Image (cartoon, rainbow, N blue to C red; front, side, top):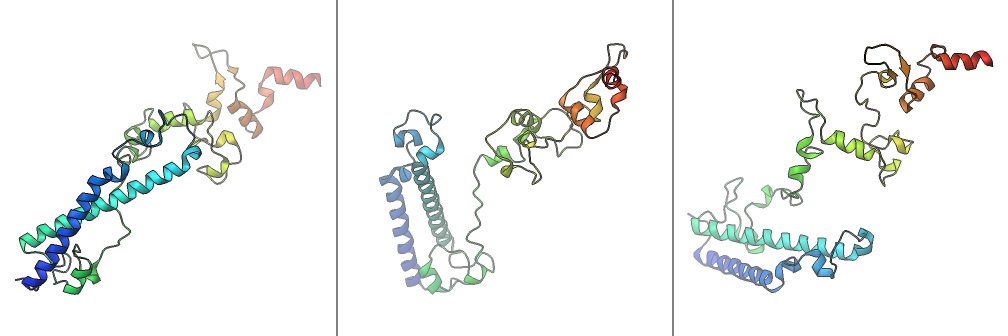
Length: 245
């Protein structure tokens, strides 16, 4: 049996119905806070790709505000409908956490509440996440195999490393590591060895039969020699240069 009198229930029922009608009228009168039309249509642009975000900063802010207001109104309408459904089932006014009666005074202030004041969840916690996160998590989406022990093939992260190694608009201040001092080290896991285990394997070459060893003087080779890992006398041309000196 409800702890609320019939008169109290009727008062709250009328209050909920008024909120429901006002919200539905609001949605119908302003086209979902202006979201019924596309962003490009709302600002009179044929395409958004040729505009820098800074050029339409005010419009982007207003669009984000409209989305937030629309989401808030949708959530409020959902809460109103849920409260009306609980009223019909006889569960209205009972805290869903403690199963104790919610005081009438609190229901007057917030007729859609499902909790007593002691058990209200964090109001800032949102469980409505952008739909893009379904693809973007884990990083690089469904093509990232770093977390799988039985997967070693070329994946989405590897593809991004190659693209990013050619340069981005980011500066070292945005680098993943706080030790980055060179733009060439900006991309993700830039120190990772790709296609070989030891660095010398990337510049020591042979013919098809494993003979005629040669040195490819690549960036990896220069870094290898610069770190005093190699012996310059193992290279005939370098040895001749040193003898002539």
